[in-house]
Length: 280
Image (cartoon, rainbow, N blue to C red; front, side, top):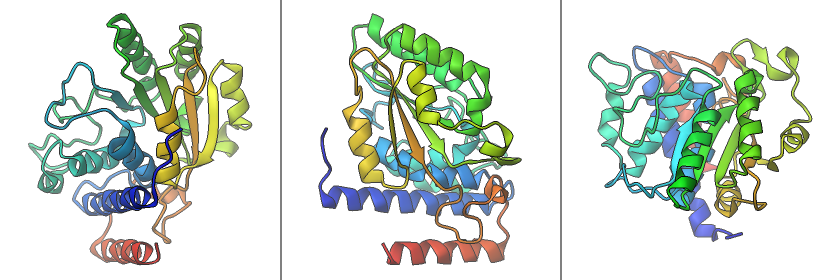
Protein backbone atom coordinates (compact mmCIF):
# COMPACT_ATOMS: atom_id res chain seq x y z
CA UNK A 1 0.00 0.00 0.00
CA UNK A 2 1.35 3.44 -0.96
CA UNK A 3 1.48 5.67 2.11
CA UNK A 4 1.06 9.40 1.51
CA UNK A 5 3.67 11.84 2.75
CA UNK A 6 2.68 14.48 5.32
CA UNK A 7 2.65 17.24 2.68
CA UNK A 8 0.28 15.25 0.47
CA UNK A 9 -2.02 14.63 3.43
CA UNK A 10 -2.10 18.36 4.19
CA UNK A 11 -3.03 19.02 0.56
CA UNK A 12 -5.98 16.64 0.77
CA UNK A 13 -7.16 18.30 4.00
CA UNK A 14 -7.06 21.68 2.23
CA UNK A 15 -9.01 20.31 -0.76
CA UNK A 16 -11.69 18.87 1.53
CA UNK A 17 -11.97 22.26 3.27
CA UNK A 18 -12.51 24.00 -0.08
CA UNK A 19 -15.14 21.43 -1.05
CA UNK A 20 -17.06 22.14 2.15
CA UNK A 21 -16.76 25.90 1.61
CA UNK A 22 -18.26 25.60 -1.88
CA UNK A 23 -21.08 23.40 -0.54
CA UNK A 24 -21.95 25.99 2.10
CA UNK A 25 -22.15 28.69 -0.56
CA UNK A 26 -24.36 26.54 -2.83
CA UNK A 27 -26.66 25.67 0.08
CA UNK A 28 -27.10 29.40 0.74
CA UNK A 29 -28.61 29.78 -2.74
CA UNK A 30 -32.34 29.89 -3.50
CA UNK A 31 -32.71 26.11 -3.83
CA UNK A 32 -30.64 24.97 -0.84
CA UNK A 33 -28.99 21.57 -1.02
CA UNK A 34 -28.16 18.27 0.66
CA UNK A 35 -25.46 19.65 2.91
CA UNK A 36 -25.19 16.88 5.51
CA UNK A 37 -24.24 14.04 3.19
CA UNK A 38 -22.01 16.27 1.08
CA UNK A 39 -20.07 17.28 4.20
CA UNK A 40 -19.75 13.71 5.48
CA UNK A 41 -18.35 12.58 2.13
CA UNK A 42 -16.08 15.58 1.40
CA UNK A 43 -12.93 13.84 2.65
CA UNK A 44 -13.77 10.75 0.59
CA UNK A 45 -14.22 12.82 -2.56
CA UNK A 46 -10.99 14.72 -1.93
CA UNK A 47 -9.06 11.47 -1.52
CA UNK A 48 -10.55 9.96 -4.67
CA UNK A 49 -10.20 12.89 -7.06
CA UNK A 50 -6.90 14.28 -5.83
CA UNK A 51 -4.98 11.10 -5.06
CA UNK A 52 -6.60 7.92 -6.35
CA UNK A 53 -8.66 8.20 -9.52
CA UNK A 54 -6.99 7.97 -12.92
CA UNK A 55 -8.93 10.81 -14.56
CA UNK A 56 -7.96 13.80 -16.68
CA UNK A 57 -10.20 16.91 -16.69
CA UNK A 58 -8.84 17.72 -20.16
CA UNK A 59 -10.02 14.33 -21.44
CA UNK A 60 -13.12 13.47 -19.40
CA UNK A 61 -14.12 10.75 -21.89
CA UNK A 62 -10.73 9.01 -22.03
CA UNK A 63 -11.63 5.32 -22.59
CA UNK A 64 -8.95 4.18 -20.14
CA UNK A 65 -10.11 6.35 -17.26
CA UNK A 66 -11.27 5.13 -13.88
CA UNK A 67 -15.00 5.55 -13.31
CA UNK A 68 -16.68 7.16 -10.32
CA UNK A 69 -20.40 6.91 -9.59
CA UNK A 70 -22.13 8.94 -6.89
CA UNK A 71 -24.86 6.46 -6.08
CA UNK A 72 -26.08 8.78 -3.30
CA UNK A 73 -26.80 11.35 -5.99
CA UNK A 74 -28.59 13.72 -3.62
CA UNK A 75 -25.09 14.76 -2.43
CA UNK A 76 -24.48 16.30 -5.85
CA UNK A 77 -23.32 19.61 -4.38
CA UNK A 78 -20.29 17.81 -2.97
CA UNK A 79 -19.50 16.18 -6.31
CA UNK A 80 -19.90 19.48 -8.19
CA UNK A 81 -17.55 21.23 -5.78
CA UNK A 82 -15.00 18.44 -6.22
CA UNK A 83 -15.21 18.39 -10.01
CA UNK A 84 -14.79 22.16 -10.15
CA UNK A 85 -11.77 22.05 -7.84
CA UNK A 86 -10.28 19.28 -9.99
CA UNK A 87 -10.68 21.41 -13.13
CA UNK A 88 -13.56 19.69 -14.95
CA UNK A 89 -15.36 23.05 -15.21
CA UNK A 90 -14.75 26.56 -13.83
CA UNK A 91 -15.24 27.07 -10.09
CA UNK A 92 -17.29 30.18 -10.91
CA UNK A 93 -20.01 27.98 -12.39
CA UNK A 94 -20.88 26.71 -8.91
CA UNK A 95 -22.60 30.03 -8.20
CA UNK A 96 -25.33 29.06 -10.67
CA UNK A 97 -26.20 25.80 -8.91
CA UNK A 98 -29.91 25.05 -8.99
CA UNK A 99 -30.80 28.14 -11.00
CA UNK A 100 -32.79 28.11 -14.26
CA UNK A 101 -30.57 27.16 -17.19
CA UNK A 102 -27.79 25.71 -15.04
CA UNK A 103 -26.53 22.20 -15.76
CA UNK A 104 -25.76 21.85 -12.05
CA UNK A 105 -29.04 20.29 -10.99
CA UNK A 106 -30.14 18.78 -7.70
CA UNK A 107 -28.86 15.38 -8.85
CA UNK A 108 -25.93 14.74 -11.22
CA UNK A 109 -26.57 14.55 -14.96
CA UNK A 110 -24.30 13.67 -17.89
CA UNK A 111 -24.29 17.29 -19.08
CA UNK A 112 -21.77 17.98 -16.30
CA UNK A 113 -18.19 17.08 -17.31
CA UNK A 114 -16.91 14.23 -15.17
CA UNK A 115 -20.36 12.79 -14.38
CA UNK A 116 -20.56 9.24 -15.74
CA UNK A 117 -24.27 8.55 -15.22
CA UNK A 118 -27.30 10.37 -13.81
CA UNK A 119 -27.82 9.09 -10.26
CA UNK A 120 -29.98 9.68 -7.24
CA UNK A 121 -32.67 7.05 -7.53
CA UNK A 122 -31.16 5.22 -4.59
CA UNK A 123 -30.00 1.63 -4.89
CA UNK A 124 -28.88 1.70 -8.53
CA UNK A 125 -25.29 2.93 -8.41
CA UNK A 126 -23.62 -0.33 -7.41
CA UNK A 127 -25.33 -2.24 -10.24
CA UNK A 128 -24.13 0.43 -12.68
CA UNK A 129 -20.66 0.05 -11.20
CA UNK A 130 -20.80 -3.69 -11.89
CA UNK A 131 -21.57 -2.89 -15.51
CA UNK A 132 -18.64 -0.49 -15.84
CA UNK A 133 -16.27 -2.96 -14.15
CA UNK A 134 -17.40 -5.81 -16.37
CA UNK A 135 -17.07 -3.65 -19.49
CA UNK A 136 -13.50 -2.74 -18.52
CA UNK A 137 -12.70 -6.44 -18.16
CA UNK A 138 -14.11 -7.25 -21.59
CA UNK A 139 -12.13 -4.35 -23.08
CA UNK A 140 -8.97 -5.70 -21.40
CA UNK A 141 -8.43 -2.47 -19.46
CA UNK A 142 -7.17 -2.31 -15.88
CA UNK A 143 -9.32 0.71 -15.03
CA UNK A 144 -11.09 0.65 -11.68
CA UNK A 145 -14.67 1.62 -10.87
CA UNK A 146 -15.53 3.37 -7.60
CA UNK A 147 -19.08 3.74 -6.25
CA UNK A 148 -19.99 5.97 -3.29
CA UNK A 149 -23.10 4.78 -1.44
CA UNK A 150 -25.04 6.24 1.45
CA UNK A 151 -25.65 4.00 4.47
CA UNK A 152 -29.39 4.61 4.37
CA UNK A 153 -29.24 3.52 0.75
CA UNK A 154 -28.14 0.06 1.90
CA UNK A 155 -31.77 -0.57 2.84
CA UNK A 156 -32.46 -0.99 -0.89
CA UNK A 157 -32.50 -4.66 -1.92
CA UNK A 158 -30.98 -3.80 -5.30
CA UNK A 159 -27.72 -2.91 -3.54
CA UNK A 160 -27.37 -6.46 -2.23
CA UNK A 161 -28.38 -7.99 -5.55
CA UNK A 162 -25.52 -6.04 -7.11
CA UNK A 163 -23.19 -7.09 -4.28
CA UNK A 164 -23.96 -10.75 -4.99
CA UNK A 165 -23.37 -10.25 -8.72
CA UNK A 166 -20.06 -8.43 -8.19
CA UNK A 167 -18.70 -11.20 -5.98
CA UNK A 168 -19.97 -13.94 -8.28
CA UNK A 169 -18.31 -12.27 -11.28
CA UNK A 170 -15.09 -11.75 -9.28
CA UNK A 171 -15.07 -8.03 -10.10
CA UNK A 172 -11.98 -7.13 -8.13
CA UNK A 173 -11.56 -3.83 -10.01
CA UNK A 174 -14.80 -2.63 -8.40
CA UNK A 175 -14.57 -0.62 -5.18
CA UNK A 176 -17.58 0.50 -3.13
CA UNK A 177 -17.32 3.19 -0.45
CA UNK A 178 -20.07 3.44 2.16
CA UNK A 179 -20.53 6.89 3.71
CA UNK A 180 -21.44 5.51 7.13
CA UNK A 181 -22.70 8.65 8.86
CA UNK A 182 -25.46 6.77 10.67
CA UNK A 183 -28.26 9.14 9.67
CA UNK A 184 -30.86 9.38 6.94
CA UNK A 185 -33.68 11.81 6.29
CA UNK A 186 -36.02 10.41 8.94
CA UNK A 187 -33.51 9.58 11.68
CA UNK A 188 -30.77 7.18 12.72
CA UNK A 189 -30.22 4.29 10.32
CA UNK A 190 -29.86 1.84 13.20
CA UNK A 191 -33.25 2.87 14.52
CA UNK A 192 -34.93 2.39 11.14
CA UNK A 193 -33.26 -0.73 9.72
CA UNK A 194 -30.24 -1.92 11.77
CA UNK A 195 -27.24 -2.93 9.66
CA UNK A 196 -24.51 -3.68 12.16
CA UNK A 197 -22.24 -5.57 12.12
CA UNK A 198 -21.99 -4.00 8.66
CA UNK A 199 -18.48 -5.23 7.84
CA UNK A 200 -19.52 -8.82 8.51
CA UNK A 201 -22.53 -8.42 6.25
CA UNK A 202 -20.35 -7.35 3.32
CA UNK A 203 -17.89 -10.17 4.00
CA UNK A 204 -20.75 -12.68 3.93
CA UNK A 205 -21.53 -11.46 0.40
CA UNK A 206 -17.97 -12.25 -0.71
CA UNK A 207 -16.36 -8.80 -0.52
CA UNK A 208 -13.01 -7.72 0.89
CA UNK A 209 -13.78 -5.18 3.63
CA UNK A 210 -11.99 -2.38 5.45
CA UNK A 211 -13.64 -0.27 8.14
CA UNK A 212 -11.95 3.11 8.63
CA UNK A 213 -12.14 6.74 9.75
CA UNK A 214 -13.99 8.57 6.98
CA UNK A 215 -12.57 11.97 7.93
CA UNK A 216 -8.92 11.13 7.33
CA UNK A 217 -8.46 11.85 3.61
CA UNK A 218 -4.84 10.74 3.64
CA UNK A 219 -5.72 7.41 5.22
CA UNK A 220 -8.67 6.99 2.85
CA UNK A 221 -6.38 7.58 -0.12
CA UNK A 222 -3.93 4.96 1.14
CA UNK A 223 -6.67 2.33 1.42
CA UNK A 224 -8.42 3.17 -1.84
CA UNK A 225 -5.22 3.34 -3.84
CA UNK A 226 -4.31 -0.17 -2.66
CA UNK A 227 -7.53 -1.80 -4.00
CA UNK A 228 -8.11 -4.54 -4.94
CA UNK A 229 -7.24 -5.83 -1.47
CA UNK A 230 -7.87 -9.50 -2.23
CA UNK A 231 -7.52 -11.07 -5.71
CA UNK A 232 -10.87 -12.02 -7.20
CA UNK A 233 -12.93 -10.07 -4.65
CA UNK A 234 -14.59 -6.66 -5.00
CA UNK A 235 -13.60 -4.23 -2.23
CA UNK A 236 -15.77 -2.15 0.08
CA UNK A 237 -14.49 0.63 2.32
CA UNK A 238 -16.81 1.45 5.21
CA UNK A 239 -16.01 5.08 5.99
CA UNK A 240 -17.20 6.11 9.47
CA UNK A 241 -18.28 9.73 9.13
CA UNK A 242 -20.35 12.46 10.78
CA UNK A 243 -23.22 14.00 8.88
CA UNK A 244 -22.59 17.75 8.58
CA UNK A 245 -18.98 17.32 9.76
CA UNK A 246 -17.42 20.72 10.48
CA UNK A 247 -20.54 22.70 11.35
CA UNK A 248 -21.26 22.51 15.10
CA UNK A 249 -24.87 23.64 14.71
CA UNK A 250 -25.64 20.87 12.19
CA UNK A 251 -23.09 18.08 12.74
CA UNK A 252 -24.57 14.73 13.70
CA UNK A 253 -28.14 15.90 13.14
CA UNK A 254 -30.71 14.63 10.65
CA UNK A 255 -31.68 18.29 10.18
CA UNK A 256 -28.49 18.71 8.13
CA UNK A 257 -29.80 16.34 5.45
CA UNK A 258 -31.22 19.14 3.32
CA UNK A 259 -30.82 22.78 4.23
CA UNK A 260 -31.40 26.20 2.76
CA UNK A 261 -29.01 28.41 4.70
CA UNK A 262 -30.29 31.83 5.68
CA UNK A 263 -27.79 34.72 5.44
CA UNK A 264 -27.24 34.43 9.21
CA UNK A 265 -26.61 30.68 9.12
CA UNK A 266 -24.47 31.02 6.02
CA UNK A 267 -22.24 33.43 7.93
CA UNK A 268 -22.18 31.04 10.91
CA UNK A 269 -21.15 28.19 8.64
CA UNK A 270 -18.37 30.20 7.02
CA UNK A 271 -17.02 31.17 10.45
CA UNK A 272 -17.14 27.53 11.60
CA UNK A 273 -15.21 26.35 8.56
CA UNK A 274 -12.58 29.04 9.05
CA UNK A 275 -12.21 27.99 12.70
CA UNK A 276 -11.94 24.33 11.68
CA UNK A 277 -9.23 25.18 9.16
CA UNK A 278 -7.33 27.30 11.66
CA UNK A 279 -7.21 24.51 14.24
CA UNK A 280 -6.11 21.93 11.65
